[in-house]
Amino acid sequence: MPRATDDFRDRIRTVPDWPQAGIQFRDITPLLQDADTFQRLIDCFVQRYLAQHIDLVAGIDARGFILGAALAYALRRGFVPIRKKGKLPFQTIAEDYALEYGAATIELHIDAVAPGQRVLLVDDLVATGGTLLAAARLIRRLGGEVVEAAAIVDLPELGGSAAVAGEGITLFTLCQFDGH
Image 1: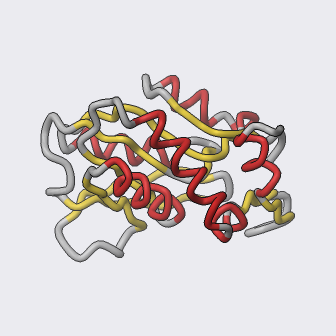
Image 2: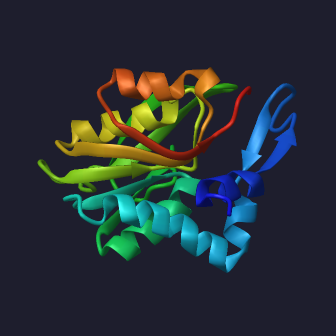
């Protein structure tokens, strides 16, 4: 019988040359389309975090919203969206970061995290680690503590998991892929 993480990995679709040539995009939507698979996916994260003291789950725009909101609901914790620049309606703080294929800015409402709150940071995938690290800096600037970062996929050859660990943040992922 295959492990759950093997089943998740087998269901992730690779889209070559998207959003640009040379990128092998790891598409998690097949995991989300099947209700049983999606539930098992969230349950894997719930099992890891149920006994930990977490105040908030922060999800990164956009697929981190899907995982983060479902996980926050299952853990009975609040959810905080970390959005692309210009998408949040209230006062924000911003952080620039480098992507595998460009640069971007993310924002967080200034009242999203209270000093001392323990935050679980969630995204779908870790490539270069730039998005996770920028999100962690936002949380820390508001006085929050990043308990851990979690994602479905790690692309270790792109150096993101090492960069996240280098900032003192534990990273939990369910599967990894070699290459870009």
